[in-house]
Length: 190
View 1: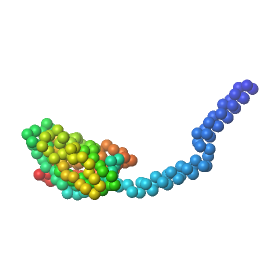
View 2 (view 1 turned 60 degrees about the vertical axis):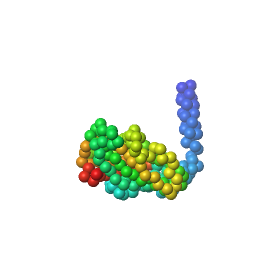
View 3 (view 1 turned 180 degrees about the horizontal axis):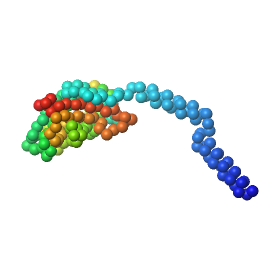
View 4 (view 1 turned 135 degrees about the horizontal axis):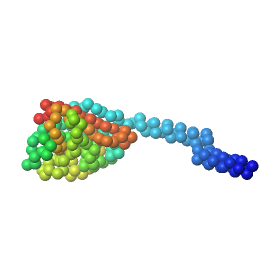
């Protein structure tokens, strides 16, 4: 009999505990529904992923830094840049324009940190422009004020390939940012 009373007490305590953690029933369900409705309204302003853009086209990026437009102005293939030779096969020198279309300033050097250039073998290169003296990089450009733009370059040390893909916000999830991708063939690069 003592076992039955003990088990009943444990069961009653467990149910009370679960009821308390749940927030007490219907009222918490209404609160959750309101939160969901609010977050759906906020997400309606989000910009979706943009893939398959070409050289000369503009992509709009929305991430934790702000909202900005990036134009891939050109991509040039070089064996050597400013006296530095490629360790892979070639350099891809990418010229960009970044325009702040958001409401607050963004740091030019930060917006380029998630850019990756992929080749047709899915190998990737990171921007090396800051390690090369004399290039017009984004790192030292300070802030880009709302409504203004800045020009600069990215430099990638890559294996020779027929196809390249520049991915903005590479590796980020959809909740932090949208992904924007430009594609170009080696024949399109100068």
